[in-house]
Length: 386
Image 1 (spheres, helix red, strand yellow):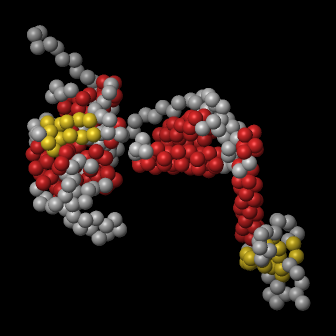
Image 2 (tube, one colour; image 1 turned 135 degrees about the horizontal axis):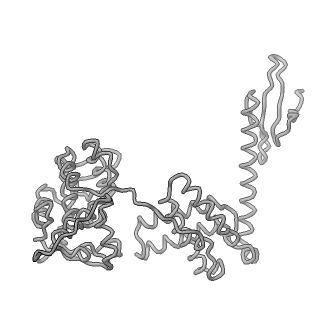
Image 3 (tube, helix red, strand yellow; image 1 turned 180 degrees about the horizontal axis):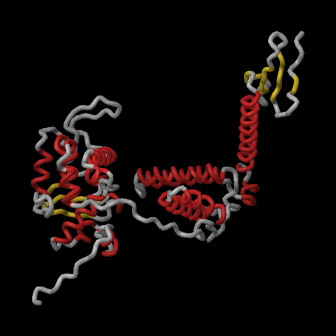
């Protein structure tokens, strides 16, 4: 009868060794803490040690999770210790999904909220949300900032601040308790460049722009209306009535409504909105959407003729067009969203009311779109009477 496995002299819990007398090699096995079965780990000492240590840690965390789950079901315990970060993350996500169903939030907003809430649950795991301190939050934000991810640090701070506000509303923490609020605000220097006339001319000369009808009309609509990509892909031919294009802006949940006259003409394009809509109809494809697929695609993302374009597809095509330009343009960091700023600047120069055009409530917001970010001098113009 073979001797039972012996514990290795440098002890790691559940790790055993056995020497094969035939070849003199020592083999390692790991005893599963729950099933009692032995799992072979080979003859490499370092790998066996590392695998056994990692396995023990996993089982220890699993056991701790089970204990915390039991405790979280006890209302008396929760009242004293508070919900764990993991448990509150689940409830917070459920709240956001309910708001989505009620039409209070957009899918993209909920997607980002869920992702950043998940980071909170992963980071603080079974710690009580009542015990998390400002220093704990600041440490996480500093980690992002040290990696040059100031934008991510700002977004995480805003999301986690909202998580604690919801916790107050739910009575899971005391009123006013929000360790995120007292962390320093994260300022982010804009990294995106503004699109210039020369940049746009180069993009409009690319193969992507010339050959992809849906991309071409989407860019023209963006420059002419200043609409965001989500609104552009949802424009329908039925939105055109009595000489106007009627749009309910998605960012305001449809509360801000704009009516663009079909005579509206951007100075850069010198093509009216009405003519661009006629160009949208020029595909001879039956579709309710202004920007639509003109061919069937059987690739990974199957699409049919007439189907609307996804916002991410426009972003990808714009990136591809930029990258196909000369190095001095392709190396610039501007995105499809910058067409909104481009529209504002070209219209303002022509004397249009860009605050109304972009659907902003304050002139201050509109003015941020007029910042060229190139640190050039602004030339003072003398009155015409001088």
